[in-house]
Length: 215
Image (cartoon, rainbow, N blue to C red; front, side, top):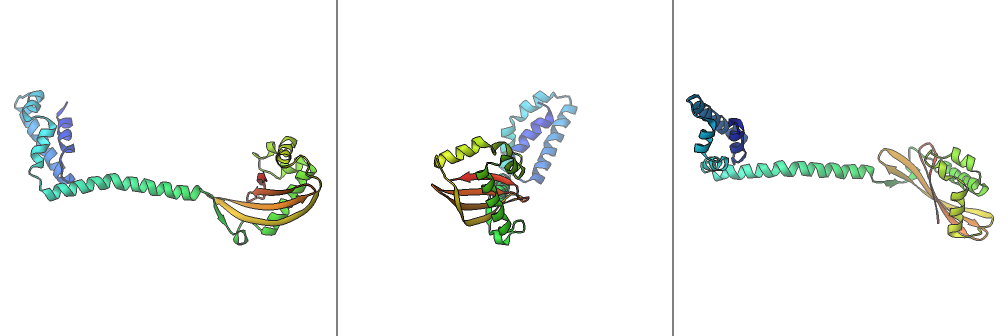
């Protein structure tokens, strides 16, 4: 261990402010270097002075209780404040990323009539099994899913025979906000001859299909 590491080890255990630590560190370092200049070996100097904890305890005895309490408070704050800031940052990040809904009637990105028309078109294309048109109207990650296999799975999950479509029901829609992205999410119950199907369809800001769910 060289003299600076020894002095720094003492300083880390001092219960005082940074200014006094700096003064004590400077004092100890000057004392050690003076002894070295007089021919003493560093190992002998450190051995005579004692362990870093012992040296620090000696200095701490001359530091007032109030200054030691202030040191303790500052030390806690140095730990607590970064943690609090990190928690606050994570909270804001979670709020920013967590999906939030808004009244689509006040949206700057979507028109309710346009969303309803897009929903009816998507359902009509599904019923017509026009997968090419569906894929053209969808985002890239959705395109591979818009096929006969997916449609068959959707249908058999509810009923083996839906029959012909009879009528579209009312539409309920919201704007979904996730981070900086905005989506239109609409639900519509469609009546078929043998079953009623509720579609939940999601569109991005370009009115491209990003999600389908049926129940």
